[in-house]
Length: 327
Image 1 (tube, rainbow, N blue to C red):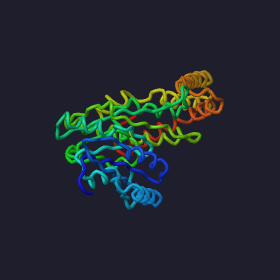
Image 2 (cartoon, helix red, strand yellow):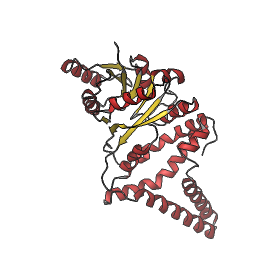
Image 3 (cartoon, rainbow, N blue to C red):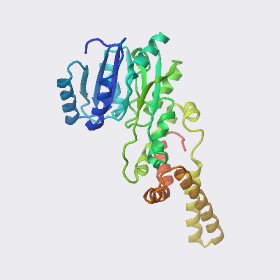
Image 4 (tube, helix red, strand yellow):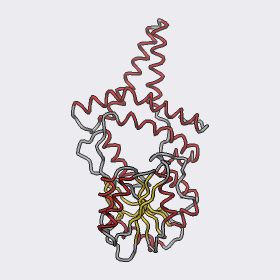
């Protein structure tokens, strides 16, 4: 690979249009005191991405861009590990293919790294998520990335720190909670994580298909895995308690059905009333401040009828799979 002060690692898989936009922003980085390389690591065979990198190499031979592909799909954690282990830089910076770094992104991290002058250290930057004044529920959820403590869309570690803690935990096979797991191990090793507000990336919220919130519930399974590995930090930084409203909705609906079947009308209507109130509160929370269109409101109502059941299903499945008591 040659020598480099910084290695930028970008996991990707068959999203060349997004990746092209990200790479163009990185190609124009202004970092007068550092040299850098970029390693694109595909999470499996990916001819389109390989072709994109080859085209960029031909058009911009001065741009130190390298392509690697895992032999089979193993998740972004594995792709990032492959990338940083192949890298030449002493500071490893991570971003994602759907992000757009600002011009002084690398310079801000490099300056912070040299000011701190510590061998084992981590950094986190600033994430901007542009959304409309009244976003959709999906856009509102993506916007939470702008307040997250530590996310792989915009973070960095000295290579020495990654060596010390072993990099990302490949038990996490999707893009969910693997960044928090890395953060928690840095914290447990008492390694500093420094916020660098001038290291800015833009993370646009991509268009989402109808019902994407339903598909996202499968991620709940990996909350159980993170809780098993780091229970105290999970409760401190992710969720102080279970989503009790979901359990209220589920238990009330079960009691209502059983009561109706057994002929206990008072109990049935009481349970049904509790279910309705809990559900209305959930729908109202999701609708607050969001897109006022009829189609979005209809989507929120319909998906809210399903989400509590799916979320708890995947949560309990994760608890069983990873053998941990987790609600």
